[in-house]
Length: 483
Ligand SMILES: Cc1cc2nc3c(=O)[nH]c(=O)nc-3n(C[C@H](O)[C@H](O)[C@H](O)COP(=O)(O)OP(=O)(O)OC[C@H]3O[C@@H](n4cnc5c(N)ncnc54)[C@H](O)[C@@H]3O)c2cc1C
Image (cartoon, rainbow, N blue to C red; front, side, top):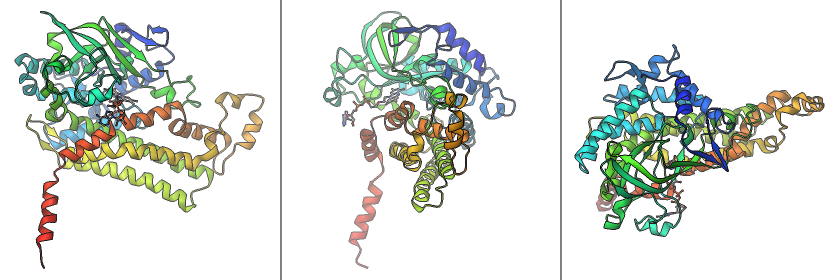
């Protein structure tokens, strides 16, 4: 199969019937369930973009094995041009949701590409595992899989986790092995997009202490979401009805977060990438280059999200006639600076990209580290700016149904804004509300703060990996100068 259409993607979801729970309900068909169908349709739209005649060449490339057109986010970049092509493709997908669909499948496609390129890394653990990574990449690319990943064990006792020892009865662990594979039990948080994905990469992230009792927690594997024994438990749905006016973002881009439970799940050997090696697991993300490729997708999402919020902020100020107030200009300028900084980080990462030790053209990690560490602070501030610019306009928004009711005349009369009629104003501010106030908005802020990891420890990694010595040497040289 080549790049999938939206209909093929939805058909795949319909036929795989994973065990998905929302409250006390087991969801039978995610493509029709009110909590998930809006996002399923948005995801399908992304797949359809691969077949849009105007976009096809920018969204797909010729498969290295079949020559068929496959999704461009799967490409193994060998040149800067490849990276730029991939970037353009990612921009097309991300702009469709204003960056609100963080888990479009390009996020994981680049991870699996980098894993395959770094097959030798997995061979250090077991000579079969590198081949597994290569084979899985071919399989994912040729079938245009939609994947998510889950990296973190549940929060039960972080004091224990901090010492590199997950909670023995809760964290996901290997409980048995046989000739078919390894058996795993326990839970992982979170898998965003889990109900709308075909497969999950269950990979390591938290640092494990190299000790005999941590070996059972050390592994990396991929698994179809409908594997027997797996359950995906959803949080409350944030779609809140399907009116595109009342819930312009939630109704379209509710990508749903899930806890993943494994009740003695058999992971076939050909799906295992790492096993029982805590050291290799702890090195996985930086060593394989996965991180830099994923961070490029994240920087693109940050740009699209900043563009979107900036566009809304400008529209809000213009609608309310507040554009000439200096503090309004200052706040909007702050959003402009955020956007330009994100663009500069992406451009620097692409311009300074180099062939890595796996032969892949890898974006420079340093500017991407800057982008992913600062955006968790920028985004909540941009949301705050929308609140400060909009004030009560974020609440003065009757539901869409009021526009077709006996009070419609009142609304048309009293809800006008300086530069918008009442109906345009309601639409605009409902959008601002879904970025700044709704439950969907709150989840987006939390997502930006945490989805790439705990910001405190991310900063600590940046501190430890940053090349500080040349700067300290320069200071020493300055102190030694007497001219
Ligand atoms: C909306 C959303 C979507 C997500 N989607 C995914 C996904 O799809 N896949 C996935 O794998 N993960 C996902 N995550 C999870 C994300 O990876 C984690 O939230 C993140 O790694 C932090 O882990 P935690 O939530 O368990 O918080 P904790 O690690 O428990 O942190 C909670 C608090 O305790 C502090 N703390 C805990 N341990 C330490 C320590 N050792 N040293 C210093 N401070 C510490 C932290 O600084 C923080 O203030 C998602 C998270 C959110 C919020």
